[in-house]
Length: 63
Figure 1: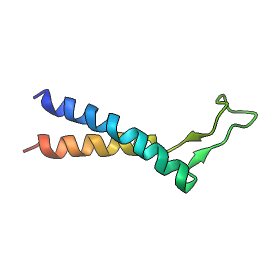
Figure 2: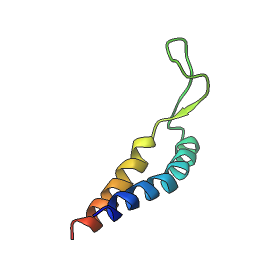
Figure 3: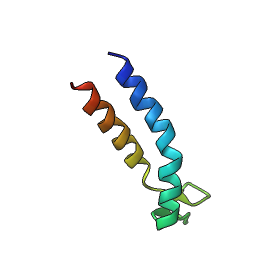
Figure 4: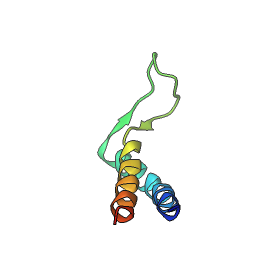
């Protein structure tokens, strides 16, 4: 039962840097402005890595 949680976590850890580089490459970033708290350019596709890792774990865990 817990193997799917570990799979989702591990896949998320592996995918986050890949998706971060992809977001920077295509320009899916949020630049710092006066009303924002961050000081550096921030990629905005982080949810994509989480969604993919959850979907893969759910697909393999539902069998």
